[in-house]
Image (cartoon, rainbow, N blue to C red):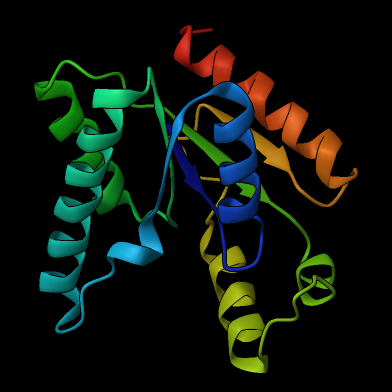
Length: 158
């Protein structure tokens, strides 16, 4: 299960909480970001995320990966997991920039600016998302419950 969305929308915090409650593994894609030229970095990062996901799947029935997705990332993950006979689904997380700007811990001005760019570029609202969850409409606990419900629906093919 991939979580897509802009910086500060809650991919990591909600993903960790949902994975814990569902007894799934969790991979924070940011922990796998490779330095260097963007194209090489994307491929190295994506391969590292796949390896970490495979490791999680040895111990858990499913894994939640928190990582903002470009279409190229989605295609890589979808096709790579498909060859491994692993179902790959995506949930987009979205919020208004005002809510993202007010989050705790606070984001830097550069992170807020990049988040606004990512929102404009469609992160969290991609055509490949199976579902979308707003993270600025309810409490963290209620949003996590909604995310878990959508994750279970996506994994069941609904």
